[in-house]
Structure formats: structure tokens, C-alpha cells
Length: 128
Image (cartoon, rainbow, N blue to C red):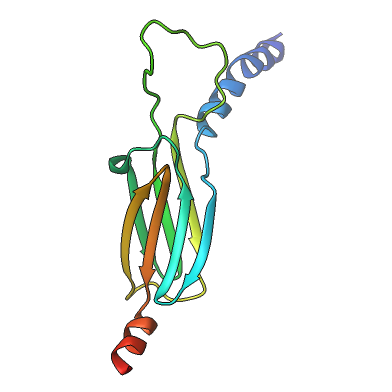
């Protein structure tokens, strides 16, 4: 009897706990080599610029934040929800050291553009 009760409790509560734990999402990304470094585009539709954090260390670039649901029309009720409104994180490794790189970001039409100017390109520009 106690084992049946434990099994019942697990079947009722663990799926919800697992879903809550795994509710973060991982945005898609494109990586481009540019003349002065790298451009990384992250698909962040519906994410506000203030809700993101970009960091880098070693060869790794990391973007994390949260996409929040917002009311588009008063009085509506959900029928079907497929978009993940929760925390996200994406980490990419690039084939260069990013410790001395300069990073700039911009949001454009649902995309976060991360421009990375690497130290090797700083030296090349100075030697020209």
C-alpha cells in the first residue's frame, strides 16, 4: 500500500515538476565570419532588449534572458499555447579566443545581433 501511494504521488506531481524544470528554451543561432570578426544572430522573437544578458569568456559566447507573455487584446482567453514564455539560454563556442574581443549588440526585427571584433582583427587593422 505505501509503495502504491508513493507511485501515485510520483505520477501526479513529478511530470509537472519536470516540465517546470525543463521549461527553459534554447534560441536558434546563425554564426557568420566577417571581415573584422564574427556576427552571431539569435532568434529572439518577442524578447525585450532589457530582458537579455550577453557574456563571453574563453571561446564561449552566452546569451540568456527571459521571454515574457504580454496581453495583446483585453478579455481574450487562451485556446492553444505553443510559444515558450520562460527563461532561455544559449551558449556557443567560437574558433577563437574572445577574452580581448569587443562586443556590440543590437536588436533588429526579433533578432539579437552580436557583433564580435576579435583582437587578431584589431592587430591586422593597425598593421595596414
